[in-house]
Image (tube, rainbow, N blue to C red; front, side):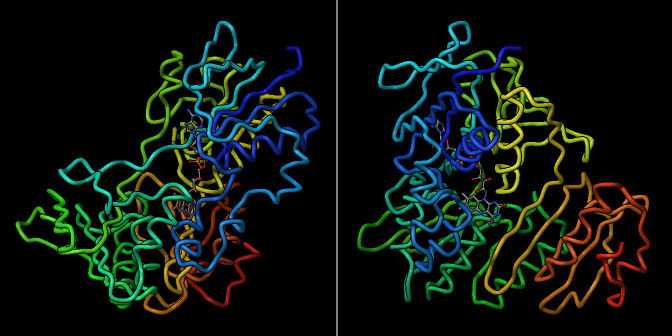
Length: 406
Ligand SMILES: Cc1cc2nc3c(=O)[nH]c(=O)nc-3n(C[C@H](O)[C@H](O)[C@H](O)COP(=O)(O)OP(=O)(O)OC[C@H]3O[C@@H](n4cnc5c(N)ncnc54)[C@H](O)[C@@H]3O)c2cc1C
């Protein structure tokens, strides 16, 4: 295989930015074109529902690179540019401007878009979605003492927005259509923990409660018609009901697409010159024994590093354990692993206290850890999980055991 001279990256988010940096770190001296729809250089999204939303961190603080470091990457950076088509035969990406950019290797890092609430009024001006920096700043101006915020969706983003809004003094109601919060990400006991955490902090959580319509009554505020026949008044709504992976470029180019763009463990699509990383990639992970599409900061970073190395012809096999964290009030929640089912956990620490960890075992091996304010427990479990070492439940539960020695 001849070495690439021109690499195009579509999507200037976290994965796109990390891929560009990795290419330079690995000594690639050719042209890197980074095409991004947003007007900003690459930035990290986790602060958008936390410190940036709270007004406690500046916009600059979430940039992936300081201005000097970004300039040193020597990229052909195209902010505010949409890639509209991939011409695989000509190996070129077409932009909305009419221009086309040739590639030897193409990395798609197009992430996804916030799923829209498909009800009347779901696209009104006071109904917010949260994926981008600009959206975070718009929501920030709707928070504050005395404001009434309805959060539709009790997933991670909904709960983080609820926590930040509550801290701003807003009155917050979370509406979750299913019977518990964070259904897709955590077992029932952790959902219960999160619900109790929010209720202690004054958030009203209504489960089994969908939204049928949002009526914008001007100065009278918003009125949400709920599935149970009741209504809820609010000054603003934030919808956090999931992400739709951005796969249209790949699909229209004839690449294999399912829930995300299908890639192998080297981030390669069905066209070996096109690689994918981040929230839009669907990859087989040997450590899980199945394909997954992940939406997490760590995956966006590490998969992008793998995609960049793979584009340079290096023999990479991506197989990182899924890792995710969330900050809500004074709770730092971390999850390592993504089991297909959640067995009864081994509890370490006081489950009703401020700090504890839950270990999920299968055949005496740790398959997942959820820790609350106990990041060290989770870090200690990573290695035994990776090498599938057997452990004893009694050791995990005993606070006297030094987990680092496992
Ligand atoms: C509010 C929020 C809070 C989060 N908090 C956490 C957290 O606490 N912990 C955690 O682990 N993860 C968190 N995440 C998830 C994490 O931020 C994402 O997994 C990560 O940003 C994914 O990176 P990405 O590069 O794949 O996608 P993105 O960051 O979405 O970047 C994709 C970029 O591609 C651009 N693009 C798409 N299509 C085109 C096109 N055709 N042409 C040009 N550009 C295009 C998009 O505009 C976008 O800028 C959070 C996410 C959000 C939104």
